[in-house]
Amino acid sequence: MSEVILELKNLKKYFPLPGGQSVKAVDGVSLKLFKGETLGLVGESGCGKSTIAYTVVGMYGATEGEIIYKGTNLAQKGYKRNLQQKGEIQIVFQDPGSSLNSRRNVGKSLELPLKIHTKLNKQERQDRIDELLELVGLPVDFKKRMPRNIGGGERQLVSVARALGSNPEFIILDEPTSALDVSVQAKVISTLIHLQEKLGLSYLFITHDLSLMRNVATRVAILYLGRLCELAPTAEFFHRPLHPYTQMLLSSIPVATDEEEKVKPAQIISEGEIPSPVNVPSGCTFHTRCRDCMDICKVEVPVMIEIEPSHYVCCHKFKEGEPIAAEVE
Ligand code: SF4
Image (cartoon, rainbow, N blue to C red; front, side, top):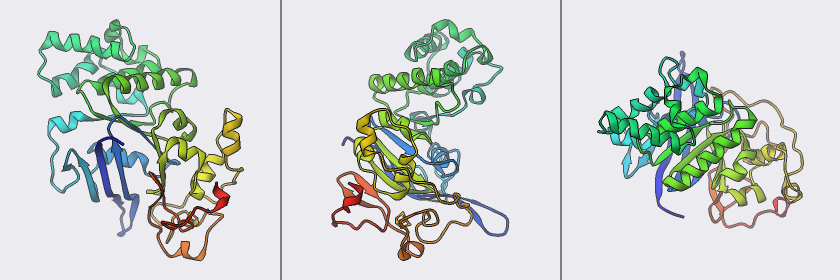
Protein backbone atom coordinates (compact mmCIF):
# COMPACT_ATOMS: atom_id res chain seq x y z
CA MET A 1 0.00 0.00 0.00
CA SER A 2 1.15 3.56 -0.64
CA GLU A 3 2.12 6.40 1.62
CA VAL A 4 0.07 7.10 4.78
CA ILE A 5 -1.62 10.49 4.46
CA LEU A 6 -3.42 10.56 7.81
CA GLU A 7 -3.26 8.42 10.93
CA LEU A 8 -5.60 8.33 13.90
CA LYS A 9 -4.08 6.90 17.07
CA ASN A 10 -6.44 5.98 19.92
CA LEU A 11 -8.66 8.95 19.07
CA LYS A 12 -11.32 9.75 21.68
CA LYS A 13 -14.03 12.38 21.71
CA TYR A 14 -16.24 12.57 24.81
CA PHE A 15 -18.95 15.15 25.34
CA PRO A 16 -19.36 15.90 29.05
CA LEU A 17 -22.85 15.92 30.57
CA PRO A 18 -24.10 17.53 33.78
CA GLY A 19 -23.50 15.18 36.74
CA GLY A 20 -20.08 13.96 35.63
CA GLN A 21 -21.19 11.54 32.93
CA SER A 22 -20.18 11.88 29.29
CA VAL A 23 -21.25 10.77 25.83
CA LYS A 24 -18.44 8.59 24.50
CA ALA A 25 -19.00 9.41 20.84
CA VAL A 26 -15.56 8.19 19.72
CA ASP A 27 -13.75 5.84 22.06
CA GLY A 28 -10.25 4.86 20.98
CA VAL A 29 -10.24 4.71 17.18
CA SER A 30 -6.94 3.93 15.44
CA LEU A 31 -6.60 3.72 11.66
CA LYS A 32 -4.46 4.82 8.74
CA LEU A 33 -5.59 6.44 5.54
CA PHE A 34 -3.42 5.86 2.47
CA LYS A 35 -2.74 8.33 -0.33
CA GLY A 36 -5.18 7.96 -3.22
CA GLU A 37 -7.55 5.53 -1.51
CA THR A 38 -11.18 5.73 -0.43
CA LEU A 39 -11.67 4.44 3.07
CA GLY A 40 -15.35 3.74 3.72
CA LEU A 41 -16.30 4.37 7.35
CA VAL A 42 -19.63 2.67 7.93
CA GLY A 43 -22.00 2.44 10.88
CA GLU A 44 -25.52 3.00 12.09
CA SER A 45 -26.79 6.41 13.10
CA GLY A 46 -25.12 7.65 16.31
CA CYS A 47 -22.08 5.36 16.06
CA GLY A 48 -19.66 8.31 16.05
CA LYS A 49 -18.65 8.41 12.39
CA SER A 50 -19.50 12.09 11.86
CA THR A 51 -17.85 12.97 15.18
CA ILE A 52 -14.63 11.44 13.83
CA ALA A 53 -15.01 13.64 10.72
CA TYR A 54 -15.58 16.84 12.70
CA THR A 55 -12.66 16.06 15.01
CA VAL A 56 -10.31 15.38 12.10
CA VAL A 57 -11.18 18.69 10.40
CA GLY A 58 -10.81 20.56 13.73
CA MET A 59 -14.46 21.49 14.36
CA TYR A 60 -14.19 19.52 17.63
CA GLY A 61 -11.12 19.23 19.82
CA ALA A 62 -10.05 15.65 20.59
CA THR A 63 -10.48 14.44 24.18
CA GLU A 64 -7.49 12.13 23.81
CA GLY A 65 -5.36 10.54 21.12
CA GLU A 66 -3.55 11.76 18.02
CA ILE A 67 -4.41 12.90 14.51
CA ILE A 68 -1.14 12.65 12.61
CA TYR A 69 -1.03 14.58 9.35
CA LYS A 70 2.32 14.89 7.53
CA GLY A 71 4.18 14.14 10.75
CA THR A 72 2.30 16.66 12.90
CA ASN A 73 -0.16 15.74 15.62
CA LEU A 74 -3.07 18.07 14.87
CA ALA A 75 -4.84 16.95 18.06
CA GLN A 76 -2.19 18.09 20.52
CA LYS A 77 -3.55 20.44 23.17
CA GLY A 78 -3.34 24.11 22.19
CA TYR A 79 -2.17 23.36 18.63
CA LYS A 80 -3.56 25.81 16.06
CA ARG A 81 -3.73 24.57 12.49
CA ASN A 82 -2.16 26.82 9.89
CA LEU A 83 -3.98 27.89 6.72
CA GLN A 84 -2.21 25.30 4.60
CA GLN A 85 -3.27 22.45 6.91
CA LYS A 86 -6.85 23.75 6.95
CA GLY A 87 -6.89 23.93 3.16
CA GLU A 88 -5.40 20.48 2.61
CA ILE A 89 -8.04 18.70 4.72
CA GLN A 90 -11.55 19.52 3.53
CA ILE A 91 -15.03 18.20 4.24
CA VAL A 92 -18.21 17.89 2.18
CA PHE A 93 -21.33 17.74 4.32
CA GLN A 94 -24.44 15.65 3.94
CA ASP A 95 -26.87 18.47 3.26
CA PRO A 96 -25.72 20.81 0.49
CA GLY A 97 -28.79 22.99 1.14
CA SER A 98 -27.58 24.06 4.56
CA SER A 99 -23.84 24.03 3.80
CA LEU A 100 -24.16 26.68 1.03
CA ASN A 101 -25.05 30.24 1.98
CA SER A 102 -28.54 30.84 0.53
CA ARG A 103 -27.83 34.59 0.11
CA ARG A 104 -24.70 34.11 -2.01
CA ASN A 105 -24.71 33.01 -5.60
CA VAL A 106 -22.61 29.99 -6.56
CA GLY A 107 -19.72 32.14 -7.79
CA LYS A 108 -19.47 34.01 -4.48
CA SER A 109 -19.60 30.74 -2.51
CA LEU A 110 -16.76 29.37 -4.61
CA GLU A 111 -14.73 32.57 -4.36
CA LEU A 112 -14.60 32.69 -0.55
CA PRO A 113 -12.13 29.79 -0.03
CA LEU A 114 -10.02 31.15 -2.89
CA LYS A 115 -9.73 34.48 -1.04
CA ILE A 116 -8.75 32.68 2.18
CA HIS A 117 -6.43 29.98 0.87
CA THR A 118 -4.83 31.44 -2.26
CA LYS A 119 -3.10 34.64 -3.41
CA LEU A 120 -5.05 34.80 -6.67
CA ASN A 121 -6.17 38.24 -7.86
CA LYS A 122 -9.77 38.95 -8.80
CA GLN A 123 -9.52 37.86 -12.44
CA GLU A 124 -7.51 34.76 -11.53
CA ARG A 125 -10.17 33.85 -8.97
CA GLN A 126 -12.88 34.10 -11.63
CA ASP A 127 -10.84 31.87 -13.94
CA ARG A 128 -10.36 29.38 -11.12
CA ILE A 129 -14.11 29.37 -10.38
CA ASP A 130 -14.78 28.47 -14.02
CA GLU A 131 -12.18 25.72 -13.77
CA LEU A 132 -13.71 24.34 -10.55
CA LEU A 133 -17.19 24.23 -12.09
CA GLU A 134 -15.84 22.43 -15.13
CA LEU A 135 -13.99 19.96 -12.89
CA VAL A 136 -17.28 18.87 -11.27
CA GLY A 137 -19.12 18.81 -14.61
CA LEU A 138 -21.22 21.96 -14.18
CA PRO A 139 -21.54 24.76 -16.79
CA VAL A 140 -19.64 27.96 -15.96
CA ASP A 141 -22.80 30.07 -16.03
CA PHE A 142 -23.82 28.28 -12.83
CA LYS A 143 -21.78 30.86 -10.94
CA LYS A 144 -24.60 33.36 -11.38
CA ARG A 145 -27.25 31.01 -9.97
CA MET A 146 -28.55 31.07 -6.41
CA PRO A 147 -28.45 27.77 -4.45
CA ARG A 148 -32.25 27.67 -4.22
CA ASN A 149 -32.51 27.70 -8.01
CA ILE A 150 -30.44 24.57 -8.63
CA GLY A 151 -31.13 20.91 -7.88
CA GLY A 152 -29.87 18.96 -4.85
CA GLY A 153 -27.28 17.00 -6.85
CA GLU A 154 -25.99 20.20 -8.45
CA ARG A 155 -25.77 21.89 -5.04
CA GLN A 156 -23.71 18.98 -3.77
CA LEU A 157 -21.40 19.27 -6.80
CA VAL A 158 -20.98 22.97 -5.99
CA SER A 159 -20.04 21.93 -2.42
CA VAL A 160 -17.44 19.57 -3.88
CA ALA A 161 -16.12 22.36 -6.16
CA ARG A 162 -15.85 24.66 -3.15
CA ALA A 163 -13.89 22.03 -1.21
CA LEU A 164 -11.50 21.75 -4.18
CA GLY A 165 -10.81 25.50 -4.10
CA SER A 166 -8.02 25.18 -1.53
CA ASN A 167 -6.29 22.32 -3.45
CA PRO A 168 -6.93 19.68 -0.78
CA GLU A 169 -5.09 16.38 -0.63
CA PHE A 170 -7.67 14.72 1.56
CA ILE A 171 -11.47 15.16 1.62
CA ILE A 172 -13.92 13.80 4.14
CA LEU A 173 -17.22 12.97 2.48
CA ASP A 174 -19.85 12.92 5.22
CA GLU A 175 -22.83 11.03 3.76
CA PRO A 176 -22.48 13.10 0.55
CA THR A 177 -25.36 11.41 -1.28
CA SER A 178 -27.79 10.38 1.45
CA ALA A 179 -29.86 13.59 1.19
CA LEU A 180 -30.16 13.23 -2.60
CA ASP A 181 -32.67 11.50 -4.87
CA VAL A 182 -31.45 8.12 -6.07
CA SER A 183 -31.56 9.48 -9.63
CA VAL A 184 -28.76 11.99 -8.94
CA GLN A 185 -26.68 9.96 -6.47
CA ALA A 186 -24.88 8.10 -9.27
CA LYS A 187 -23.85 11.36 -10.96
CA VAL A 188 -22.31 12.71 -7.72
CA ILE A 189 -20.52 9.41 -7.00
CA SER A 190 -19.08 9.12 -10.51
CA THR A 191 -17.88 12.74 -10.33
CA LEU A 192 -16.14 12.02 -7.02
CA ILE A 193 -14.42 8.95 -8.50
CA HIS A 194 -13.35 10.92 -11.59
CA LEU A 195 -11.92 13.72 -9.41
CA GLN A 196 -10.00 11.25 -7.28
CA GLU A 197 -8.35 9.74 -10.36
CA LYS A 198 -7.62 13.13 -11.93
CA LEU A 199 -6.33 14.91 -8.82
CA GLY A 200 -4.94 12.02 -6.75
CA LEU A 201 -7.30 12.76 -3.85
CA SER A 202 -7.73 10.61 -0.77
CA TYR A 203 -11.24 10.19 0.67
CA LEU A 204 -12.68 9.21 4.00
CA PHE A 205 -16.20 8.29 2.88
CA ILE A 206 -18.65 8.25 5.77
CA THR A 207 -21.93 6.43 5.21
CA HIS A 208 -24.57 4.17 6.72
CA ASP A 209 -25.02 2.57 3.29
CA LEU A 210 -22.77 -0.48 3.29
CA SER A 211 -23.83 -1.63 -0.18
CA LEU A 212 -22.62 1.68 -1.67
CA MET A 213 -19.11 0.89 -0.45
CA ARG A 214 -18.85 -2.25 -2.55
CA ASN A 215 -18.12 -0.21 -5.69
CA VAL A 216 -16.63 2.92 -4.17
CA ALA A 217 -14.28 2.03 -1.30
CA THR A 218 -10.73 0.71 -1.41
CA ARG A 219 -11.12 -0.51 2.18
CA VAL A 220 -14.09 -0.64 4.54
CA ALA A 221 -14.09 0.07 8.29
CA ILE A 222 -17.07 -0.69 10.54
CA LEU A 223 -17.79 1.46 13.59
CA TYR A 224 -20.06 0.53 16.49
CA LEU A 225 -20.65 2.78 19.51
CA GLY A 226 -17.50 4.78 18.87
CA ARG A 227 -15.18 1.79 18.39
CA LEU A 228 -13.91 0.01 15.28
CA CYS A 229 -15.11 -3.58 14.82
CA GLU A 230 -13.54 -4.58 11.54
CA LEU A 231 -11.34 -3.12 8.80
CA ALA A 232 -10.45 -4.85 5.54
CA PRO A 233 -9.84 -4.32 1.81
CA THR A 234 -13.25 -4.10 0.11
CA ALA A 235 -13.17 -7.38 -1.84
CA GLU A 236 -11.99 -9.33 1.23
CA PHE A 237 -14.51 -7.51 3.43
CA PHE A 238 -17.52 -8.49 1.32
CA HIS A 239 -16.20 -11.98 0.61
CA ARG A 240 -15.34 -12.88 4.19
CA PRO A 241 -16.90 -10.67 6.85
CA LEU A 242 -15.74 -11.85 10.28
CA HIS A 243 -17.18 -9.67 13.03
CA PRO A 244 -20.72 -10.65 14.14
CA TYR A 245 -21.86 -7.04 13.80
CA THR A 246 -20.48 -6.81 10.24
CA GLN A 247 -22.26 -10.06 9.41
CA MET A 248 -25.49 -8.65 10.83
CA LEU A 249 -25.19 -5.50 8.71
CA LEU A 250 -24.29 -7.42 5.56
CA SER A 251 -27.10 -9.93 6.01
CA SER A 252 -29.66 -7.16 5.62
CA ILE A 253 -28.42 -5.45 2.45
CA PRO A 254 -29.74 -6.33 -1.02
CA VAL A 255 -27.33 -7.95 -3.47
CA ALA A 256 -27.25 -7.60 -7.24
CA THR A 257 -25.62 -10.84 -8.48
CA ASP A 258 -25.75 -14.59 -7.79
CA GLU A 259 -22.06 -14.42 -6.91
CA GLU A 260 -22.76 -11.90 -4.16
CA GLU A 261 -25.74 -13.93 -2.93
CA LYS A 262 -23.45 -16.96 -2.44
CA VAL A 263 -21.16 -15.14 0.00
CA LYS A 264 -23.80 -13.02 1.72
CA PRO A 265 -24.35 -14.12 5.35
CA ALA A 266 -27.74 -15.68 6.06
CA GLN A 267 -30.29 -13.19 7.38
CA ILE A 268 -29.43 -12.27 10.96
CA ILE A 269 -32.20 -10.58 12.88
CA SER A 270 -30.92 -7.61 14.86
CA GLU A 271 -31.30 -8.27 18.58
CA GLY A 272 -32.10 -5.31 20.82
CA GLU A 273 -31.51 -1.61 20.35
CA ILE A 274 -28.20 0.22 20.09
CA PRO A 275 -27.24 1.06 23.71
CA SER A 276 -26.81 4.68 24.76
CA PRO A 277 -23.28 6.03 24.31
CA VAL A 278 -23.65 7.43 27.85
CA ASN A 279 -23.96 3.93 29.35
CA VAL A 280 -21.90 1.78 27.02
CA PRO A 281 -22.00 -1.94 27.83
CA SER A 282 -18.98 -3.40 29.62
CA GLY A 283 -16.49 -5.58 27.76
CA CYS A 284 -17.39 -5.78 24.07
CA THR A 285 -19.93 -3.02 23.50
CA PHE A 286 -21.77 -5.23 21.01
CA HIS A 287 -22.34 -8.05 23.53
CA THR A 288 -25.94 -6.98 24.30
CA ARG A 289 -26.91 -7.68 20.67
CA CYS A 290 -24.47 -10.42 19.69
CA ARG A 291 -25.78 -13.92 19.04
CA ASP A 292 -22.26 -15.31 19.62
CA CYS A 293 -21.73 -13.62 23.00
CA MET A 294 -19.52 -15.57 25.45
CA ASP A 295 -18.85 -14.93 29.15
CA ILE A 296 -15.56 -13.18 28.40
CA CYS A 297 -17.34 -10.73 26.08
CA LYS A 298 -19.22 -9.15 29.00
CA VAL A 299 -16.12 -8.29 31.00
CA GLU A 300 -13.13 -7.95 28.70
CA VAL A 301 -12.75 -5.38 25.95
CA PRO A 302 -11.50 -7.15 22.79
CA VAL A 303 -8.51 -5.70 20.95
CA MET A 304 -8.10 -5.24 17.22
CA ILE A 305 -5.94 -7.97 15.68
CA GLU A 306 -4.74 -8.55 12.12
CA ILE A 307 -6.30 -11.89 11.24
CA GLU A 308 -5.19 -11.90 7.59
CA PRO A 309 -2.89 -9.41 5.83
CA SER A 310 -4.70 -6.03 6.09
CA HIS A 311 -7.86 -7.64 7.56
CA TYR A 312 -8.40 -6.52 11.15
CA VAL A 313 -11.13 -7.64 13.52
CA CYS A 314 -11.96 -6.78 17.13
CA CYS A 315 -13.75 -9.80 18.63
CA HIS A 316 -12.98 -12.49 21.24
CA LYS A 317 -13.90 -15.20 18.72
CA PHE A 318 -10.60 -14.59 16.95
CA LYS A 319 -7.06 -15.02 18.28
CA GLU A 320 -3.90 -13.87 16.54
CA GLY A 321 -2.15 -16.73 14.75
CA GLU A 322 -5.10 -19.12 15.09
CA PRO A 323 -6.85 -20.31 11.93
CA ILE A 324 -10.26 -18.74 11.27
CA ALA A 325 -13.20 -21.00 12.15
CA ALA A 326 -14.69 -22.76 9.11
CA GLU A 327 -18.17 -21.35 9.70
CA VAL A 328 -17.14 -17.89 8.50
CA GLU A 329 -15.41 -19.12 5.35
FE1 SF4 B 1 -19.84 -10.97 19.96
FE2 SF4 B 1 -18.08 -11.44 21.88
FE3 SF4 B 1 -17.23 -10.92 19.44
FE4 SF4 B 1 -18.33 -9.01 20.90
S1 SF4 B 1 -16.41 -10.06 21.33
S2 SF4 B 1 -18.76 -9.42 18.78
S3 SF4 B 1 -19.89 -10.13 22.00
S4 SF4 B 1 -18.41 -12.70 20.07
